[in-house]
Every structure is written in structure tokens, then in C-alpha cells.
Amino acid sequence: MNDSIRGWAISITAVAIAAMLIPAVVQAQSPTIRVSVPFEFHVGKVTLPPGTYMVQSKGAGNALSISDRIGHAATAITYAIPNSDPKSPSRGALKFKMYEGDQYFLSEVRWSGYSTALALEKSSPELKVGQVSDKPTTKTIAAK
Image 1 (tube, rainbow, N blue to C red):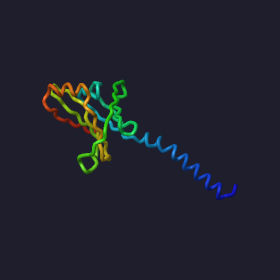
Image 2 (cartoon, one colour):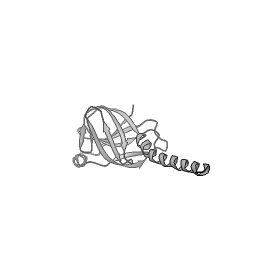
Image 3 (tube, one colour):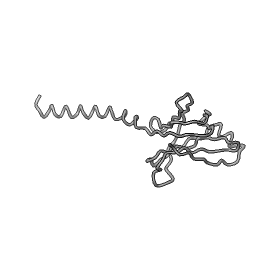
Image 4 (cartoon, rainbow, N blue to C red):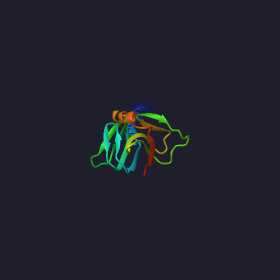
């Protein structure tokens, strides 16, 4: 095999290996924030106690994983929404909808440096509470 063909074969092999590694790198870099939540809250149909949680985007950005690493965890399907602030936030944050009776439902997650946030669909428990409660207020908790 002459040198130019060998060089070309090595280049193609290197590109193929890089293409296989890119998904693993992208998945490893999915955004994660750490947030201390001082109240009980709902994520989908799961109720989580107060605590410090790690929040991470999973998959292609349409799923959310939240865990306190001591057994309390939930996942939720999300959709991206544009950031209402034209500047990327300097800190990540969780946004909750609070209904009468101090019932908190996670509604949105923002990461620092990202121009979009992830919004959670209203769960069936939230829809039930919303039928008998006044309009919710919002509470935002910044990441550590």
C-alpha cells in the first residue's frame, strides 16, 4: 500500500472513531444543576420531600431526571421553551407553581448559559388541584 492510500485510510478510520465517540461525549455533558428545595413538591405524579436535588436533562433534551441520591427520585417528560430573558441566566434555577395549601409543582428548569428552559407538562394531580384552587403563584429557587 502506498503512503497516500495509507494516510487516507488512517484519516477515514480516525473520523469513524470520532463519530462513534461524539454521542458519548454529548451525553456526558448533559446539563446538571444542584438545588436545595425547602418544601415538599410534586414532579409529575411523584411527591418529593424537601432536600438537595440534582436535576439533569436526559436523552435528546425531552426528559428530566431529579434525584437526591438517597432514594428520592422522579422523571418527567419536558418540552423546550425559549428563555424570556434575552441573556442566558447566570445561574440555573427551578420554577414551581404554588397552589393554595402550599402545594408546589415543578414547572420549569433553567440552566446557566442556555437560551432555552425545559417546561414540564401539568400532571393529573396538578390539574385536579388547579380546578379547585385560585390561580397559582410562582416560586423560583436558584441553583447552588
